[in-house]
Amino acid sequence: MISHDTLSRLKYWLLLTAGVMLTLSSCDDTFQPLQENDTFFFSIQGYLDASADTQWVRVGTIRPTIDEVPNPEGIQVTLKDLESGETVVMSDSVFTIRNVLNYWTTYEIKHEQTYEITAKYADGTTSRVTMTTPAELPSVHIIGQGGVGVASGVRIFIDDTVEHIADVQSVWYVILNPETENRRSIYSFPLRNSLTHSRSYFGSYTALVNWERELAQIEQSVGVGTAIAIVNRQIFVAVGGPEWDENISSIADFEYFLAGNASNVENGLGYVVGVSTKWFRQSICETPDGSNYAPCEPEERYWYKE
Figure (cartoon, rainbow, N blue to C red):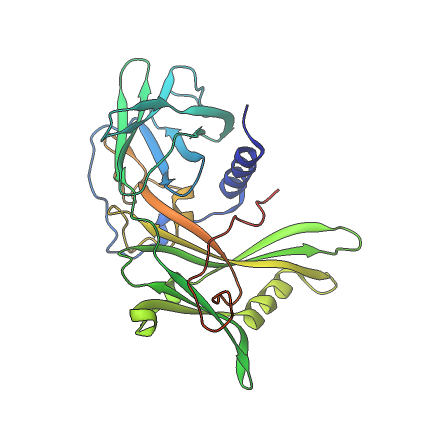
């Protein structure tokens, strides 16, 4: 039986598929196809997260003989640990959107390990992709910002030993019209492109989270007359494995793939990388006695979209 957490992740993936039209086509012109294949059987897109308990990938059908809405019958998707040789069959979620199937597994993904995902038809035609997960995210520090002439918020510092910072987001959890509609909503603000290098904490990448500006954007999006109750704020950080391309703006880019964009899938289309993700509270992280700043402890994601 699929756990509540797994179902929540599924809802999150499906909502991204239905409503977040982010594609790799907006990337820099230098982000060119990594390979040209004469025959494409499947598209495979997504990522393996060494910090997650459930892995999701999207597998799309390309051959014109396959119906618009694919039937998982006759399609097998496997995940293989290339070091141990262990192979597991990924489960299809039975949910399809257009020509895309969602596959999942609770197989444990480890840091700094190489995996292979294979999609195969009953006739043996196959597409596969290989990716390596990164080392675990090192220390993150968060300090408060505010005062006379300074916008309220926090500043985040990420250890600069990280080779590929794949994503950084400020995430707000709010309730719209709490007295009547009482609707949960999540707003994310990208920070990766605003990172600069700092000498703080023996070398780090840093970005400022401006709460006033982000709240103003939320208020503008919901319109006049909508009451907003702020429930929580978190920082999301993702680091990427060696296949990560710096021209990719966010791991959300893997939610869609269009023909002509970069691909690392053999005999197919799409892009898959290894990542490691963590969530942190948007508050000052200090030593237990409050005498100094300290590395922040990660926490669980506060909400998934319903």
